[in-house]
Image (tube, rainbow, N blue to C red; front, side, top):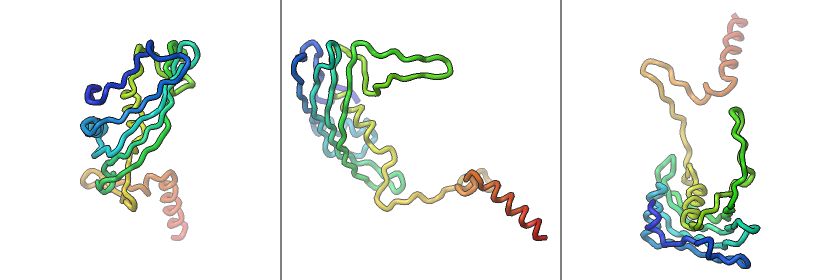
Length: 186
């Protein structure tokens, strides 16, 4: 989604006061909600508001603490009927002038401890934070109340399909046990 479809809510870091928080509220208009819903493959975003504050975090870094509230509609993964989900979640980001080092030797990659850390740029883009947080919060597999996924089996023509029961870890051993029991009974 192009950033231009959302209201301009970029905070210039050089203009932020060091001694007090800067409050914000982002409420995209109807057109922006439609564009964002399309970008995130949602049927609809009924409500969306992102509020909070940005404050100095040490001498050179900044911290964003906010609350994202949204009502989204997306198709059920089983029935395709609309599923409405209400999201109310805290959002935190730390914008660091110097990102922590992480090792990346061939066998193991050690990521930084702070998953909310991002490199500090000249501006803090509240729309980008909103979009990322919403994308991470929406259910990946929404399911209508009472919707049950039935077992589906697929295979090549002329072959026996593998079922969920066959895929169980000890299904093969159970079949072998049954064969051996049948031979013992003979």
